[in-house]
Length: 326
Image (cartoon, rainbow, N blue to C red; front, side, top):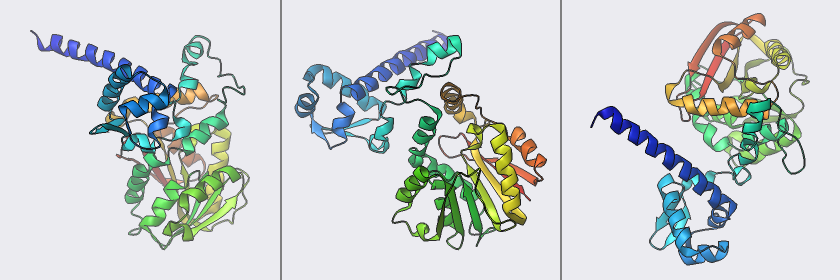
């Protein structure tokens, strides 16, 4: 039998398996299996009783979930694997409530309706992406290393606009404890950031400025580095222009702006980036990912020079960093 034929069989079976896994995960979420296992490991009879399910079908479901890496088995007990424990409960449905609108959106290009039962507006999109701090940390570490924080760059005054969860600022400070960072965001996001930073040594080097980042008043020619992470793809062009102008004013001579966002170019991240592209278009109005070239053009228009770009190779292999000097 030809290799191409065998490969076709393999691809077809992988599609079937992928579809079955998707349905199995949805069933586990909808029927409370995942929620129950968040409270600790359980035997099959106990889990079936707690979820009011039949043991034999549940056993077959758990076998598939084990194969996905979501569930682990220890003798007679089942438990969530590590990925299940870091999976935010508020994102438990993996976005089903907005992906359900995909077919209608493809046909009519109409935005997702906003109502009490389906809170799918742009603020909801932004809030959910604050909850994924746990999987952006590797990219933040890559960024700190790319910038040589604590080596070539140290003792910096950092301005973090739209700080969100503060993960990128905290990682930068971890690499250079002599730097200080001012986090600028609204009250809800700064509260999330404070919770994230609580108990960390780096929190001592943080200053908090509760304000709309587009309206913040900061001293001119003061900061060594302005950080804008995971924001430029969701901002309208006029807001991005405003932030870049603000960054230029706030920076000292030869200070630098650092833009971290989703960028194309990493082969292993094509699927993840394509999903982000589609999700962004589905859930927001008129936002899109920018290419490094488009970002470079915007920076030049605002007086920045010596523009550099690098991919951040950490999983999920979708992030990149743009560095430019005043």
